Every structure is written in C-alpha cells, then in structure tokens.
Image 1 (cartoon, rainbow, N blue to C red):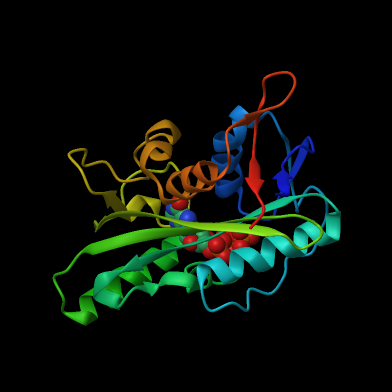
Image 2 (image 1 turned 90 degrees about the horizontal axis):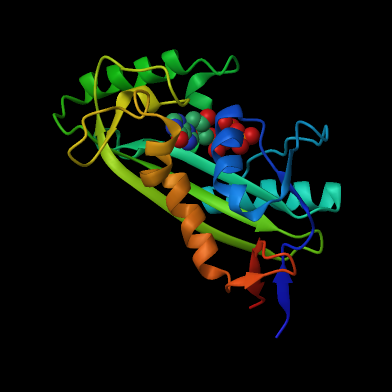
Length: 217
Ligand SMILES: O=c1nc[nH]c2c1ncn2[C@H]1C[C@H](O)[C@@H](COP(=O)(O)OP(=O)(O)OP(=O)(O)O)O1
Ligand SMILES: [Mg+2]
C-alpha cells in the first residue's frame, strides 16, 4: 500500500483569495507546514472550466502542484441561495465582477431574491478542497454549512458573502460579525478540512508533528 505523505515541509495554497489563505493557514497550523500561496510563487491562476466545485478545486490544485513541483491544496467554494435555485453557486466569485466587489454581489443576491417573490431565506456555503501532488495524485472532499440570508448585511469580518449569512443555530451573528475562531468551528471550509483530515491515517513524524498521510487508493 503506497502511502501519500505530506512530508514535504512546504504546501502551496492554490488561491489568490486572501480570506481563504487566512482561514486555510489557520486550519493547517497543527501540521507545522510552511504554507506558500500561488500568489507568493507567481504561479498562474488557471481557468476554472469545471462544472462542479470539486472539478474546479482539482484543476487549481493539480495546476499548482505540477507548476511548482510541490504538493498543493486548492479550495473551490461558493454561496448558494434556495430562492435562486442554488445560485450563485460555482459562479459566486463572478457575481462580484472583475473588481471583486462583494457589496455588489450581495445586492445582486438580495434583489434577485425580491424578484423571485419567494420568502425562503435558506442558504448554504459549499467548499471543495483538493490536495494534489506533482505526479497527479489528488485527494478531494466537500464540506457545507447551512443557514439563511439576512438583509441588510451585518459585520465586516471574513470575506465575500459572509455579512449576509447567518449559520443555523442559536447564535444570530452573521459570519461577518463572528470572529475566525467561531467561524472555523462551523464553516464549510472547516467541515471540508476535517473530512480531509479524517481520511488521513493518524501519523506523526519523528518529532511528533502530525502528518497528512493518505493510503493511496
Ligand atoms: O467563507 C466564505 N465566506 C464568504 N464568501 C465565500 C466564502 N467561501 C467562498 N465564498 C464566495 C466568495 C468567493 O470569491 C467565492 C469563491 O469563488 P472561488 O473561485 O472558489 O474563489 P476565488 O475566485 O475567490 O479565489 P480562488 O479561485 O483563487 O481560490 O465564493
Ligand atoms: Mg476562483
């Protein structure tokens, strides 16, 4: 059985999204890896031609791993609204336009919900994580968080659509109002990361550092 170890000390994060880099770097902390982004390495940002979150995450991770010769992790994620038949979904970044203006994107969601005449405020985030090696081996998972849309948006923390989303549960804070420690307990990114780690077998290297090690399928 071939074991795929993340024993290189370096991991490339195949993203130029600052919000994701902050949250993924925080989730990776227990693995003591040196995390570099494709932005740091001036690597190309590939076309996201996939029709699913997983397909796009794999494209980003494999492109970065093969271009850098270093294992790479990518996140493809998005915001979905029931009243908009799960839109914007994989097009969540595109609704913000070339200027990545998420105030515009959130207004678009809000106005489309008004036009839909639906009173269903259910919404969810999806995060697909892919971890790829330069030889093309890739592990991928998907995580979710469910909740509802609120208007007007509240809070300046996080990024993207955070300030218009209240996760299910007693706490009525939006993701834009809560801090990273609360978000990382319940977010789609944390859910995907824990599913990825649960697929690893529990390994520690010589100095006790936890390893991301997979039994190759
Ligand atoms: O936790 C989140 N809180 C709020 N909004 C979020 C979150 N997670 C994804 N989102 C939204 C904004 C993001 O721009 C888009 C992902 O689109 P997506 O293509 O995966 O990312 P991106 O283009 O921003 O960066 P990159 O492709 O370089 O990873 O969905
Ligand atoms: Mg993108």
